[in-house]
Length: 183
Image (cartoon, rainbow, N blue to C red; front, top):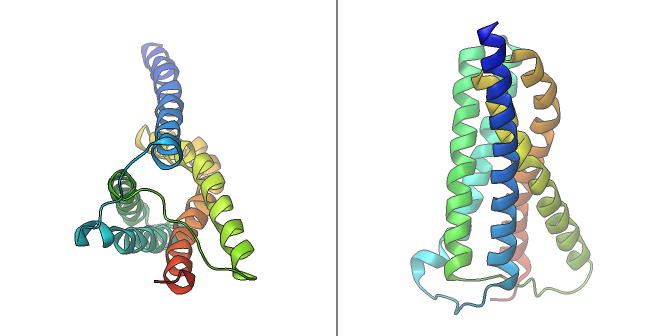
């Protein structure tokens, strides 16, 4: 009986905490990108952060795919390590992204023509789905770490494609900015 009560208490605390942290992180990022006034930094290391972010997003996408393959091969320990790697890569991305936008500000997409709606569709879907993916990733990890395998699997079926899409489109957005923005 005590285990069940502890489990319910954990969920009553953990789930609202995960949602609260997610909402605060999303609000902070919107403020940072769209409302904070700053003077863009021209430092070389700051200019290198978007490329680092693309590498971290690409690493996360690769690790997610490898983690999916591992669980399909019934290798749960390998799956766990790969997904922890994907989580670490995504977390480092988020830190680097915050540092970049704190020091540089927003990057405008200046290209014209057909590529412009393609870029903005990719960007808007990336942002929208990242808002959904953040709490889902945290919930999926919570249920995995608390050994709630059944609910972990159910949520992971939604988390996996969203997280993968956000990671891949992060790389695509970087590539589109590099390729189509005039230097």
